[in-house]
Image (cartoon, rainbow, N blue to C red; front, side, top):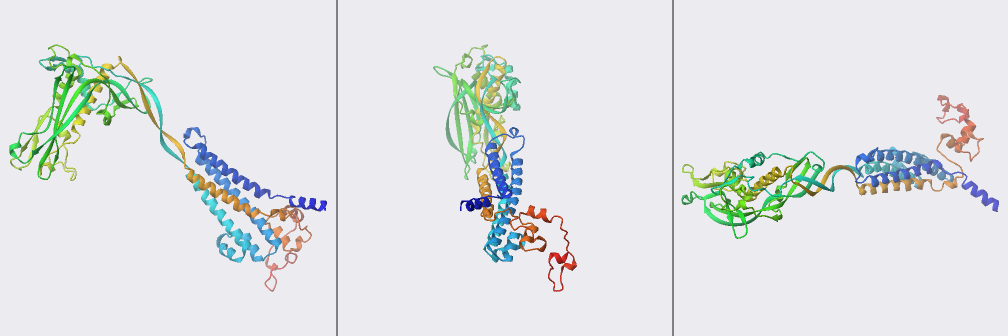
Length: 524
């Protein structure tokens, strides 16, 4: 009894479908390797990979497909001979062999359960093979992202504009404004600001931060009143005006800036005139800047909300500063506004067209005039009463004054006052981005394929010897005369060793008079 059990065990484990098992193991290894590549490559730069992840995934997918085909062939062979051992019909065996390829799928489904099972599993395996490749490719993409880091940068920027740099006081005015001309010209031309070309002054990428420098803070209030644009009695009324004046109080000097402009005109030609009054105080402010490599630019959207680092009072900004004394920064700003921004554009009805027009000494009224938005027609204001200006006109003026002061502080501080400040550096970087949804779908497909193909091999131990779908093996099973002396449990390599020199040829004489194929011995 013990010897029979031992013999049964030896027969059961005397062979293992190594080709199919190795192929399934290769599929599993490729699946694990692909998942590892997708996980590891996430957020990594291309330079860290000698071979791109997409190339590796393509290789794993190709090897996996080859292994699937090998494993499927082994599984079909095992299913074929298990079905033959149990007893079946020749049609079942044929459709198991064809595995539902081409137009054999539907006949395979109808012929019987064994053929149907093999055909469905083989078809699903083909679908898995087809789907897994694109899913793996979609699981990783090369995208551009911004890497953020902290950077310590330097910029030569004066924290105070010394009295006299913008000129001298004379009869309540500022004369000798020549020192500030470079700042004026650079502001007017909107020249790019270039930092020093040395370490610590340059940003590799885009850096944003705040640096302390000479400037001003503003305290603004606003009021409105109405104006009938079609009433000739209102001719001469200001519709766009900018004025400034130096003011003193008990503890400080400040510059009062007044901006008056039409912000809205209704269908009855009644205009809303806004009057913004801003008091400017000299201060060390924290300029919001953006650096790219060696260029510096102010972040204009944040200029009007800057926080002061410290306030200071300059004697040269007093309204009654004696003649010959140096002008302070606010006095210099007052002179700057008076020369370049001062305006008093007034409304007047045109006698020929009976439409309101405006006229004044400055150019900002033209720069900030707002055309008809709906019609996008620059001449529309000549045909109706809608004379109105940008609702952010005061903000635009303040931004221009901040820009002028920043450029002035750069010139004064060049080579003498170096400010250190922390910046947030943003560097555009190409990285691999993994999409775990596609990876999960690919893994599910591949693992399903492994399970399906593995199910075709289930029961292999019942055969007790290696099997294939070699024509020699099937010929022996069908009792071909030339193979009758071969052992029934001989594997295909053993059969081949016995009959390798036996000649064979098909020809017309192989068909008998009844139209049936003769036996092998008759055909030879």
